[in-house]
Amino acid sequence: MVQQHEIVYMNVTPELLKRYHLGQCTEEEREAVSAWLEEDTISVTHEAPEVPPSDIARSRSVMWEFLMERIPQEEITTPKHNRRTLWRWTPYVAASVLLVALTTIGVVRYGVKPPKQNEITVHTQVPYGKKKIVTLSDGTKVYLNAGASLSYPKVFLGHDREVKLAGEAYFEVTANKQHPFIIHTAYDTQIKVVGTAFNVRAEPHRTQVEVSVSEGTVHFMTGSDQKDFVELNAGQFAIYDEATHSLAQGYASIPFIGHWKENKLVFEQEPLEDAFRKIEKWYGYKIVISRKQLLNQLYNARFDAPKLEELLRSMAFVLGFRYNIDYEHKTIKIY
Image (cartoon, rainbow, N blue to C red; front, top):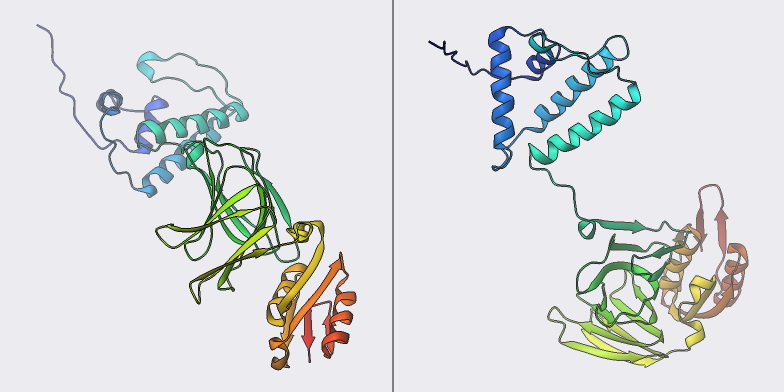
């Protein structure tokens, strides 16, 4: 007659699992852990249970402590009933195996799946006083002006190539008729292209979104349903004003579209308030204005890689104000 052993189910803890692998369990504990391991192997095809993050972190801590205690002083063995030497671990191999094991446990036991490449979103923020060039996975180049931010997928895999922009940027879009390139900007506006070059100005402090085209054709769409749009060709621009819900078109000088990426600072009949904001972003300085009446004036000028003091000296002469530059605290006072 074969004697039947009743398996006693108990709570399998990280400490118990540690003793199991060290061969320090009682016969009852060993059978309970073996049953738990077999049950766990079968259950991986079912929906994963909810596991508190604290338990996962605790398990990782115990596993790491165990490896650090045992390496390299002694060999890791199986339980006493089937004792045999596996191999002598080195810290580097152990660390690698631990990472693989934790990843596998997360994927299989807890249902954690690594994100797909097209699900990974990259966020880029350019600080004041800097500019940046970003090359997207399709080869499109995006020149980001100071203060701009861009969100885009690490890899374009869907039908549309979509990005989100806040601030000013110049796009050189790789042509692909099967996969349109769409830029989401402020106030439910979108720019849709196939392959072209153009400048977008969609700064958070402005109620306007401006698009200027230097090559190709652009569809500038407004409204939540995107039914209203204008088609812009090279040498044309459009401005959507959220304050008036109006869309205006005009002609632009192509050499001056995206001029800022060539380190040219241009003001075209620009309200002085906007001009000072542009200067803040360009140089990374804070401007404090005591003469508020200055802000109503319009400013028109073009500079080629100007130094800060050169720019302010010229503006002060034309507009009739005084200024003080605090280089240590990066502050400019206008009075």
